[in-house]
Length: 274
Image (cartoon, rainbow, N blue to C red):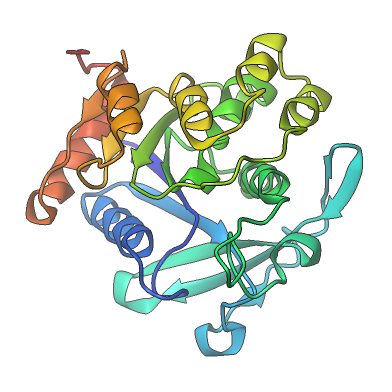
């Protein structure tokens, strides 16, 4: 029987950045999913704070070189890769000098979000999907970690919906308590319209704050999972009202088989919405 394929996209992952809940969780679930017998791939941004020499990143020339157009501007895509020996897996990095050379990840040293985070996110998810096409690797399900990866759901359900490579791909969003306090660029609807998104999407994101953004993302997902108990009342309400399969928060010791079974149910469309 052919192995089920799970793609993990994370806004950060251990051991390449300072350890955070997202970085540790995304590594742990990816590793355990692989140990449960599934085929996996892992993608993350190559922020400037990642030490390439220490972690032995190297560019994959055959995958690099594509230009990704965002808001009528072309940005070259660079793909790098490194191994996590302890987890027996590889991690692919999406790189671009305009978006990821800066030392900080999503905000500056004063905690102010970068104004181009929307474009950085679009570049990241499109870079991931275009790289998968070059690899000839078709994911059955994509597990997204961190709000920076959430826009993946929009692109799978709209921009790539007629692409046979992703025709059967399902999206699961892993919710954390991370958020952004500043709105994303108010021109985000126009940028999505440039990529051919329908008015129903662009109208829904006219006010691109965290809650509005999260609601739109989850409305395009096939499943949702919890990384931790939610402490944002608005986010808790959004999650509780979802009409898609959900995996409630469970302790780390029980996560391995639970996530593997949940992915099976999402892929096979056998989960019952409660």
